[in-house]
Length: 365
Image (cartoon, rainbow, N blue to C red; front, side, top):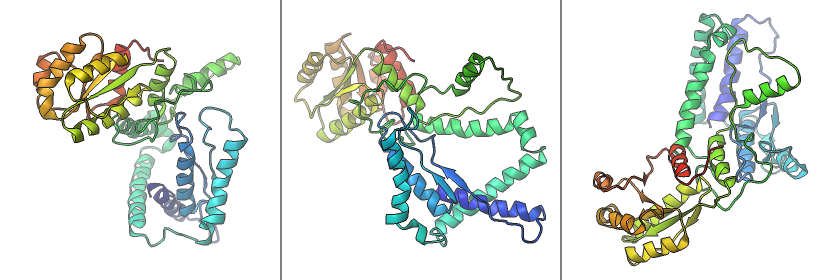
């Protein structure tokens, strides 16, 4: 809905600008809009999901009434699109037009209270910002002063934090990843690196040219890159780390926490060994050690952790890293007994998994 409102708000603001500039009678006030689906949302792992992303973005653009639309192929982020991916991207628009009949209604969003409301709010906020920038000398002056960059960085930092803590989801990347998928040869460190301007500078220098940035450049990147770098580090490490779900006690709680923990560690490409429930701690520890897993995750209810986790840690010793799923009330008690590793919905997934990669001897890219 925000994408739909964005285009609608832009047209409103364009009309305001044209009117305020005193455009001559008969001057076209309509803004011609060309849209391209987002590179920011593309992922290199589970890349077929990009087809769905491209479809929903194309729908938003069509409902918003853009004049021209380009749908990027699903593999655009990591290779030169092939005939198949290009055909699928092209047919997204054909389906929306020929089967969904998106071309039969002039303004599908017109009259929607929610769309109209957020359109008005977005237009007002954008107009206020526009006037603020103009009052301070205009866009060029504010770009040179670094104001534009700082405003964009504030938003991108907030988004990055939301992805890192999984408040926002990138399907197949920071939520519900397929840990069995391995990166192909076309996925390289450069593909998942955020330092695009540096790479561009290296290319320019290699061709005997020179670039002197008069202002701080904006640094484009994809939302998934930090997670992909984490995953690629595991894939290229030559190791196949495993996380064993040691489930015991309350069935509902142990299964829920095992599912959460499996999803958590799979984000880093760590192989998951899941289990239904062990009859005893001793049985679970025996199976965990036999599996050769480098990480053993205790999954149960809070009430059972105080007595069980120290015993699990004693039986495992230094043969694996013991992790507790959740933030139990007895956490301070467990910390006092040497239990240091906890994961929960409050965890920063990126920072936490980088720490576990370091414990496993997996070097960052």
